[in-house]
Length: 143
Ligand SMILES: CC(C)(COP(=O)(O)OP(=O)(O)OC[C@H]1O[C@@H](n2cnc3c(N)ncnc32)[C@H](O)[C@@H]1OP(=O)(O)O)[C@@H](O)C(=O)NCCC(=O)NCCS
Image 1 (cartoon, rainbow, N blue to C red):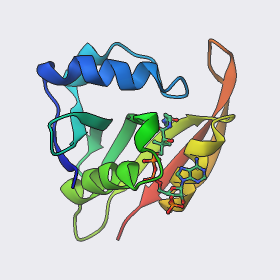
Image 2 (image 1 turned 180 degrees about the horizontal axis):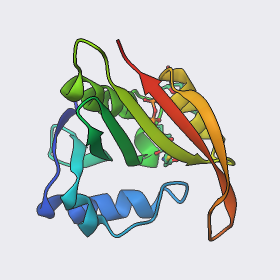
Image 3 (image 1 turned 30 degrees about the vertical axis):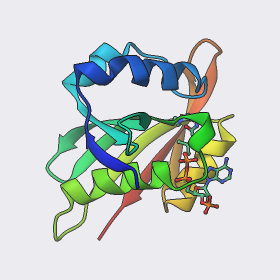
């Protein structure tokens, strides 16, 4: 049963490989993730199956910066576990909000976030480059 733990410098090689195998994810240098809340989903043998990077922007609010699951392990509830773990760690009695941006063309991720009860709140035209594309801003509110 995969478990979630904080990610650290020793995990960056595996995170880099999962990110490279996930071209729809943001392709940032994983070294920078150590400045934020980095969570990894770890198999019994210690291998990393997925990761999530977020940053808290207010006591009851955070931004999901990046999320990816190794292709061979998708559709097994891994990303759901990662997002739930972020929500649970911030949860207050008044609820919390999670914001994110996703490429308009990333229909798999949008389907995932919809399944996680995120709502599409606005569109940011030409938000991305390489290739240029609009971002859909999505928000989840727990209570
Ligand atoms: C998006 C992503 C993180 C989802 O990870 P995952 O571990 O496969 O997602 P889960 O198994 O937790 O999915 C939970 C639910 O989301 C929905 N969902 C997930 N992937 C989906 C897909 N490809 N198509 C339609 N619905 C999908 C389903 O409702 C799913 O439940 P089900 O499998 O019981 O039907 C994964 O596809 C990925 O790494 N994509 C590449 C990177 C990326 O796009 N990151 C997002 C950047 S904003």
